Each structure stands twice: as C-alpha cells, then as structure tokens.
Amino acid sequence: MTLTDFIYIIIIPILSLSVILILYRFVKGPDIVDRVIALDLIITTGIGFIGAYSIYTNRPSFLDVAMILALIAFLGTVAFSYYIQKRNK
Amino acid sequence: MTDIIVGAFSFLGAIFILLACIGLIRMPDAYLRISVTTKAATLGIGLLLLAAAIHFQDFAITTKVMAIILFILLTAPVSGHLIGRTSYFSGVKLWKHSIMDDLENKYHKASQELKSENINQSDEISENLEKDPESKY
Image (tube, rainbow over all chains, first blue to last red; front, side, top):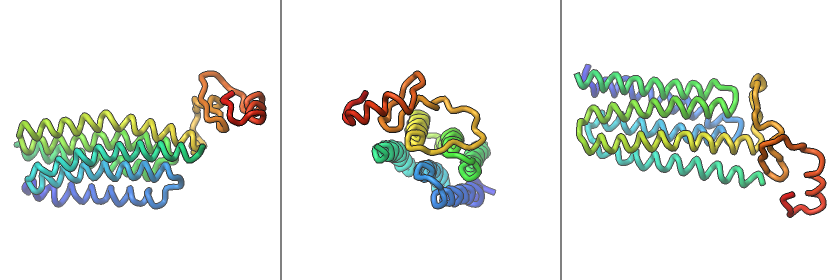
C-alpha cells in the first residue's frame, strides 16, 4: 500500500466521519454556544483535510488555503462571541 | 522510510481529530465541550500539518506549516476562553455534577459587572439601579 492509497483509504474517511459527527452536534446543539464551538471545530477539521489532501495530490500550494482558513476560524469565533455577549445586554 | 513516518503522523492526527469529535458528541456541557475540542483538535491539526511538512521536505513549505501551527497554538486558547466567557455571561448552565464554579456570586447579571469579591445580587445594587438606571453604581 503506497502513501497515496493510505491517505485515500484511511485518513480522508476518518476526517469525513469526524465532520459528520460534528454536524450532528451543529444541528442538535441545545444552545447557540454549542453551535459556535461546532463551527470552529468544522473549520479546524477543514485545515486538517487540506493538509491530507495536499499530501494526496502532491501539491503544496493547497497549504496557503489552510493558513487563510486558520485566520478566518479565529476571526469568526471572536466575532460570534462578541455579538452573542452584546445581544444579552 | 519517509512514507512510513508521514503515514504514522497523519494517522495519529486523524485519530486525535476523531477523538475530539467524539468528545464533542459525548460531553454533557458546553464548557466541557470547549475543553475537549481546543486541546485535541490542536494536537491533531499539528500532527497532520507536520506530516505534510515531512512529506514535501522543502524549506519554504516547512516554514509555512510552522507558521500555521504556531498560529493555531496561539489562537485556540484565546478563542476557547472567549467563547467560554461568553457562554457563562449569557447564562449557559453548568453540568449538574460539576462541583466547582469559581465565578458564582461574582458576576452581576443586570449590570454585567464582574468583581473579585462576593457581591450580593439583591440589595444595594438593584436599589441603585432602580433610582438611576444609567449609573454604573
């Protein structure tokens, strides 16, 4: 089994399963805070997805997207927490 | 040899991300969920990106990967703290078996003020607020 097969058969299905599990929490989540946490974790898993996919396709330029995504995840969480706190005032 | 190391690192990273997701499903409380996801996901992402760096063996890509890992290590605790603070202030309940709440009686809901010493929710503060709603007692 080559590395490409290993990534394709094992790593990417595990990551897809994790995204499905997070989506369950995102839909069910009893509070809006749980949904924000789930969204943050979905984006973080997306960064991992991009890393695995750049190994699979042998193209390192995908990692630029991962950097942008890491920035956006942080900004999104900060903005969500700021506005949820403002809403309760 | 490099392929084996890359496979082991990426497998460990994927397993850690999966564990974080199971924790997100199983934990009973928003605060425990924050605690699980920030720690486990940071380690999983770090291992996956490190596997990419080992696979390409290029100085520019290694620098990029190190920048992403450093950024995630810096921002994950900050965003976890912010969202935990927001959920406490917006009134998310703790789990019924949680034994410690350090902020109990230290946060006044109506005026949204946080103090180091215990404040009494009922007396003078609410009186002051009734007299003059604009003042920050």
